[in-house]
Length: 93
Length: 381
Ligand code: SF4
Ligand code: SF4
Image 1 (cartoon, each protein chain N blue to C red):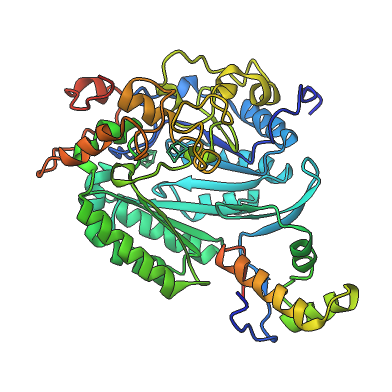
Image 2: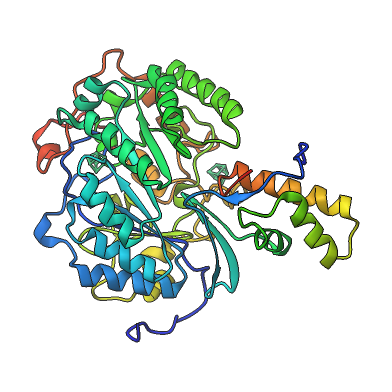
C-alpha cells in the first residue's frame, strides 16, 4: 500500500541487512536477520538506489528518467515496494 | 575449494541456509531444548577445519546464510574463526545464543570476525522463573547484560522468548523489554514439542486460553510497532487446524549439521526410524543435498498420502512435520496430525484435552537425564 509516504523520507537498509549479488542463483538477494528475499527486477532497480542518503523523491526521479512510465505511477510503485520491505524488516523508512 | 565436486544434477533448488549445531555443550538445561535426548560429547564434535569445509561447500552449493547454534555455540573456542570464514565466503552469519558466555571480550572478537546478527534467547522475563527453566541461577541477569552489550555494540539484536504454560501471562512484559532495548526483531515463540520439549510436554503445554491471550497481545503489539520492530510469532501445534511448513518443507531450504557432522533436513530428523544420515566428513554437501536418500525421501510432494496429495495447500505447508507425524502416529509418512484434515487429528486434540491442570516438574536437559526419569510421554503407541 502506498500509505502516503512523504517524498522526503530517506530509506536505508536496517543494521544487519545486506543486499548482494549471488553468483549461484545469478540474482540479487536481500539478507536480513532471519529474512531472505530474492527481489524481482523492479525491486532490484529500487534497492540499488537505497543508500541511506537519497530520498524517496530522488529515487523516483532517477527511475522516472530511466523508465518509460509516468512519474506518479512510479512513485506509487516505489512507495508500495519500500513499505513492504520495511514491514519485512529489511529497510528503515 | 577444489575439493568440491560439481553438482551431480540440478534436481533441487540450492539450500538457503546452513544450520550448524556446533556443539551440544551448554551451561543451561532448558527442558524444551531442541537437541536430541541423546547428547553428543565434546570429544565427538567436528574440528575447526571440518566446519570450515562445510561452509565452503555450502556456499558453493548456494547457501546464503549460516546459523551458528548448539547447544551453546559460544562454548566453542573457535567460534570467531568460524565466523571469520563465513564472512570471507559471503555467508550471512547469525549467532543463536543463550548469552551467558557473552562478555565485552567475546563480543569484540565476534564483531572483529564479522558477525552479522545475534539472536539472544530468554527463558522468561521474570528472573527467578527464567533461572528455574534454565537450571542455572544468575542466568537471567547475565542475559540482560548480554542484551546491553549487543545493543551498545551496534549489532542488530533479536530477542527470542520461549513461551510455555508458566510464563504465557508475561508476554506483555517481554515485548516491553524488547522495545525498551530497541531490538529490531523479537520472537515470541511457543515451545515446539520435539526433543526435550516433547519429553516435557505436560510441564510446558499452555492452555487454549493462554494461547489465545498471547495471540491477542502479539497482534496488538504488531499493529502498534509496525515498521519499528518485527515480531515473529510461533504457536504450538496442539490447538492448530493446519500444520506449519516445517523447515519450509523437507530438504527444501535448510540443511542441519549435528555436532558430530551428520547432515539432516531438520533438527529432529534423528528421531525418525530407518534413516541413516550421511556424515559431512565422508560425503560432500552437494552430493548429500542432491542425492542423499534421506534428503530425497520427503522432498517435494510425490511422497504424500491423502489428504495431502489432492490438497491445494500441499506446496504451502508441505504436509507438515514428518517428525511430529512419527511421534504421534508411529508412521513418518502420514499427514501431520496437527492438520484438521488428517485422519489422526484426534490424537493431537486428545493431548490438549488431557493436559494436566497442575504442571509436573521439569526433566532438565542433561546427559543421561532422559533415561533416568520415568517416561510420561506417550510417544508412538
Ligand atoms: S535451549 Fe537451553 S539448554 Fe538447549 S541449547 Fe539452548 S540454552 Fe542450552
Ligand atoms: S491435508 Fe496435508 S497439505 Fe492439506 S492442509 Fe493438511 S497437511 Fe497441509
